[in-house]
Image (cartoon, rainbow, N blue to C red; front, side, top):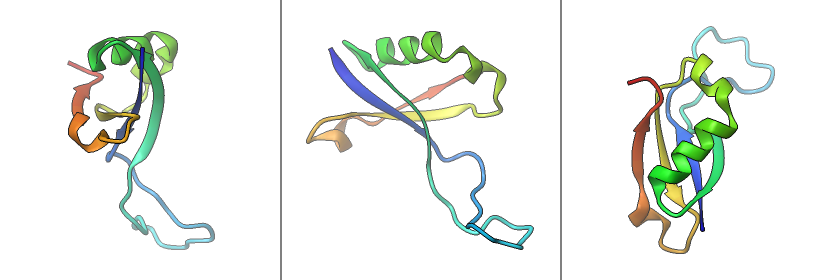
Length: 81
């Protein structure tokens, strides 16, 4: 079983005590971590374990295998098809 981290670049982030109406910085947001033999299986497990994700407005998420060569394992998924 492999462990994968799922992230998104969607959404906005504000610094603490920000008074700006515009987001202060661009960053990624953690969607979750799930196990699976493959990225697809881990994505299915994530969606089954965290069903509330279907109710959120995030759509495009990507994952990395939590391993030393994680950059080679990047894969994109879509919550809403």
